[in-house]
Length: 608
Image 1 (cartoon, rainbow, N blue to C red):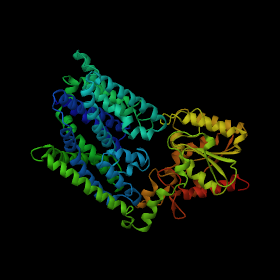
Image 2 (cartoon, one colour):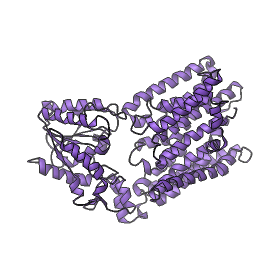
Image 3 (cartoon, rainbow, N blue to C red):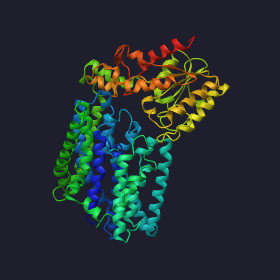
Image 4 (cartoon, rainbow, N blue to C red):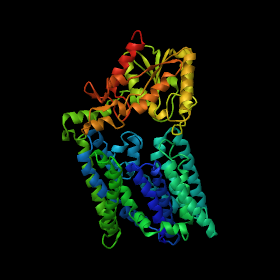
């Protein structure tokens, strides 16, 4: 197919925001949408190759998959070898345990499924997964498996329906994505069925849907608008939005406009400018190398300011160039590396990496690398409620009447909240019977819509109906949530006050638990890597002061502030009775939750 420099420039626009976003640069909160641009480019290029070769009678499945292996595998293997070596030095046992599955998933093209099973992209552990970013390779590789089969079948059996079939599959995948994002955002984020429409959007361009406008002015406008849409998405889209969903249509549409009209335009010429095009040429290796370097730099305590952020970006670009020059280019050369060599090398590499991953798995995170204290602190990431998986839905909603009943006896107390209520529920249940009604990312507020949790409002309406129903037997409601983020949301404060009043008006005793102070880092990892066991309360004061000022004004509720439990003076303790107080960056650990629960029961309940 004909080379287009503007598409290499588009690759640069796709990869740079991803790198800057991951490095922590401000103002790039939507940098992750660069992956969506990559999907459109891949769909366009792959479909164009298959379509043109099939039309000319030159298509071969063996040749096609050989080219994919040459393009993907050598650089990926080099990256995986680096990640394995670096992980042995930098990852804690709890983090290293997750790596073998990711490694095997990466080499067998199912890493997106592995990461989906290991939880969400924006989960607390995400930043400690050096192969997290390879989820998109899994999606693309699965597309490469199915796309040629579908295209060749349609071209041979009913070529007149090719455009209809591609349009239909794109529409179905988009609808599936829009619907599933509302109730199962992690599934929608990681899996091919909900991402295929982004790749097939590129496929549609390859087969002439839509056709390129005949007017050069129209193409100039569309190309410029497409670049603008992508850049606007980089600045305006953020991880709090329901993504991919319909929001992903912004970068996808922008990429479609550029691919459709960019060739021969002034905007396209800018994209083809040599420095921009050079970044595009090394974009695959840059995407591979940047994230593990960022993870290891953060783990080493080196990523702590603009200078270090800039340095890791420069090093990523250098490693990408080395990978492109000495790995990518040589292995694409069929004379230097014949088919038999690339096939045999890939098979041997897969086998070797699999054996190595199994070996790491058998070490159970190799805790012997660290002292007992480091291993103990690192293990605190698992200091969670034994009922967390069973009783706390991360996706979808269940009727509150089916919520978990914990403890012995009929529960007259309910904990209603987001994920911050999970450990508290179990800790309370060791003292009194409790009904746990928690939903991840969904604060207990009626009439408050969360874009990333579209079902949250419906869930909360059902919960409050259940709680005020005398048949529920609930007399006391404990409200708990992450206030530092919620208080910033428009409409939260008035809606939360209305929720409290409605509960109180229906005769319920309402206790609001304020947020536990946090240093803003993953506490187990921070402590395990030698961090101080105390931090100044003044660091949390900008959150604590407005939170308590707001809570004290609420009518119909009593306020419980757990801060004095870990902050008896000017300093807050990250270790209480030998155990970390948080199991990540903001969730109270099971250990400290027991102390909070005992204080709550002693203060507000006359009898256990």
